[in-house]
Image (cartoon, rainbow, N blue to C red):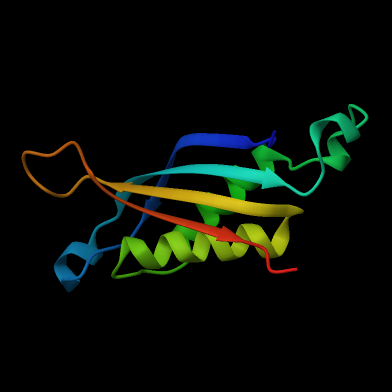
Length: 118
C-alpha cells in the first residue's frame, strides 16, 4: 500500500497564456497535487518534522506560480513537479493544472507524474 498526501484544487494566480494579451492579466488556476512521501506514515512517530508540511507546500506553490509568466500550463506543471521533488522528501508527485479558458468547457487540464530518480 502506498501512502499519499494530497492538496486538491489549490487556487494560484499567475500570468499564463500563449498570446501576449492573455498573459497580460493575472489568471486563477487550480493545482491538485498527490505526493508520495519517502517514508511510510507508520514511521512518522506523529512528528510533523518527519513528513511533508502541506501548508508550507501550498505557500511555495502559490509563490512558484506567481514568480514569472509562462506560456504553457504544461510548463507550470513541470515546474511544480520539479520543485516538489527537489525540495521535499518525496518519491513521486502527480500534478494536475486546471485552466478556465475555453468556452463551453469546465476547464482545460494537464497532468504530469514524476518520480525521484534514485
